[in-house]
Picture (cartoon, one colour):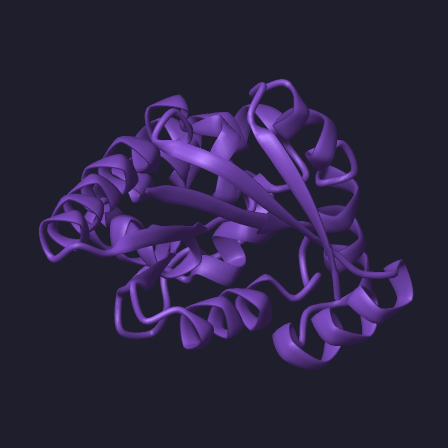
Length: 185
């Protein structure tokens, strides 16, 4: 079986996911943040091509000193602009689906159930369809804000922008018709 564990930024998805895996030896997890980072790395050339002009126009440098993609700067570029975010997702999500489907198949072949740890899994219907149930992790706004500042070291306005972009997250998951279990953290 495959499940989705989700929630807003800094709600504690990783903590809850790790706890669930520790408590059930037949359960494994895949972190979509890490999978997205891998997919972005694999799609770097296409991302540079797709966003170089937008980044230049906004004074954002997408390349690190070593020539690799600066994901933080990419995020600063795309998260405030829904169209840019959609463009990036159209490049990266097909690779994410491929990587996750491979992980799920390998895990199921070993007799394991899978937790897909993802904030916006609903945006990938092919993966959402595989999930039997959704665990939605919640935490108070201020607790999330403190966690995000401590963990991500991003400017406050950038964190608030990401929080704002996730304000309707639960309602998006409700649209999937899947059973949702709220987990308070």
